[in-house]
Amino acid sequence: MKKNDIFLLSGIILLIGIAFFLMQFFKSEGSRVLITIDGIEDKVFDLSEDAIYKIQHEDGHWNTLEIKDGNVSMIDASCPDKLCVKHRSIHYNNETITCLPNKVVLKIIGGEESELDAIAN
Image 1 (cartoon, helix red, strand yellow):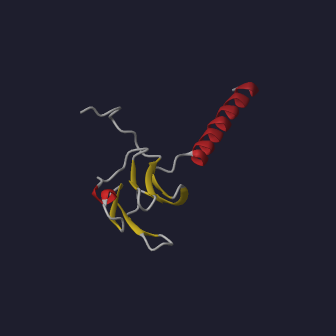
Image 2 (tube, one colour):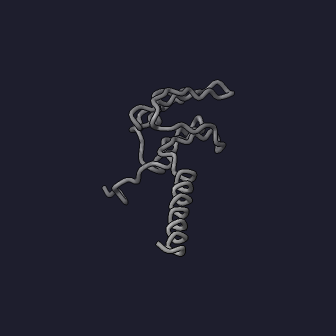
Image 3 (cartoon, helix red, strand yellow):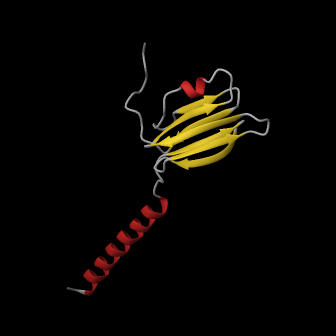
């Protein structure tokens, strides 16, 4: 092996090391649910950990969400129509559950993409 071969090999190993470090530093955290209340970000939860979280509003209203097996659903709310509770669970990127009376939005971020581009009736 010549001197230039050693420099070339060292440079390749260094570039691989830097690329690995950057991938670890900037890698995606996976699926999460973003909770916004009245347009303001409140909390973010990881979908890989099962949890139940109660959102308590200052005016006495509340919503309860459940994260189970990578899916998010609204399991209870103080709103009169409870449309958010009747909504199916969500897990695909950019899916939302909205409670209009309580101004709460659950949005999936960083999740897997849905296989459907559009839904036709």
